[in-house]
Length: 399
Figure 1 (cartoon, rainbow, N blue to C red):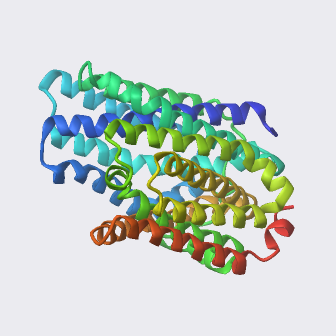
Figure 2: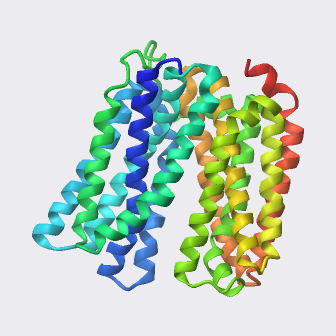
């Protein structure tokens, strides 16, 4: 790595933050379900969180380009930690409260986008371009381990003792992640700050305009949005598909997801080598073909083993795609625009997830196989878009 200490600090902070995300994934719904039996109020937590992330993505990108990214990453995590510690303390003294949980999750949604965007923008400043694939692969592998394997069981285990205990754990993990981010070298700063600042939406539009004009990075952003639609079409109804088509109960479904995450670990281990052997274009095309085929075969699967293997291949494709696309964007986007361009790409991805969820629910009402097949078709469209839009540019521009 170009800056061993810088990457180590960023990697450690990301690992703790992702572990907290994994704990929250299980603990927060459990806490909500202990406070209300209304499914609308429980689902509303995710809706509130997702909506805020979507609408604040572009302003967040401006902040990441305006200010010291190390400071933003550190304080975003510390503030998340403080919010959860305050919530846990209020639960301890005055009892659990659904409104307080909503307010805390809304605040976390506001600052989490800052942490995520700042981390992506910081990586090219602490890692040389030739090592970006390897660095992104390490972060992806750690995220899978903490999000899928370590965090969720830990969240359930802590909740079994008391509702406030996982909140204290979340607060501590995020605060520690913020403290570790302070170990990033002080030279890791954005290359902006001179000149007169414009209105925040004017500055945000600069990232959108750059993305529209740059054929390669713009194509990657469009593929990301479409792939998110295809992903959520299938995964929004996956629990019902596993129950009715595969005959799995809740425990079996959890094991199925855990097994599928192994494909992500395989993807993170092989992505840098695949990119070196095949180049960016072929690695991206191959991963998207794998994603489309795996969903298509999953749609007709009635065997648990076959379905689990296809899900593992799908997650593998997603990791390889993410590593290659993010590394390309980090290589090609000007440093002073990194936050805004990343935010504009994130908007397309978040919008795709929302659209895919709606489409998956509607198509699932017809037949549970339909949204999975539709997801495979959307991934096939991504293959066509990548074939036409990437050309031979990735290899030439990423040198």
